[in-house]
Length: 196
Image (cartoon, rainbow, N blue to C red):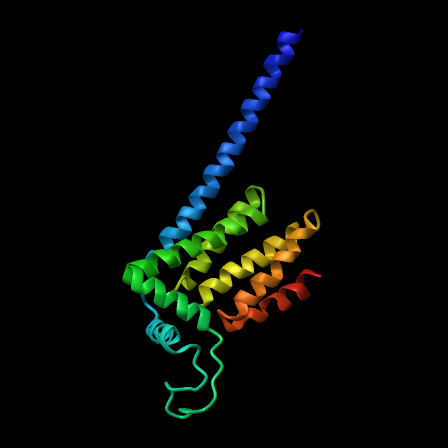
């Protein structure tokens, strides 16, 4: 009798292992797909503005005056992208355009990985697969790529906060970084309204 129970337990363990392995392989393939979809040529011309401003931030600090536009040259200016610009310039100096593409692709992979942590199950996997394909048209070397990441982090924390409320302590840090990377840092307020 005990030999039969041991045999059944081993089969159940093997079935769980195979199911978990299958889920891991699906997840890994989706993260890899996001990376590959983001490995494309630089197509956004704003990048050069961001890189030049990032260089200036390293040399002079965060710009306070608008020096780039014709109509408002010399006027006070709030650079909401300064952290992205500074980081992008550092990556560019270290690895050139290849470094920027690899950084972008890595961030795109992180977006999908965080989203996978937030949702579980086969239906969620297929939904996230479609979402990854749709998001891929926005995988540019722009501050927006970090908004995708921060949105995924925010949603993952909100989904798991019921069981792990200490995760909520992470959100103010995300919010501060987000506010210094891109102007869409107000997105969590919209998510909060929709979730609650």
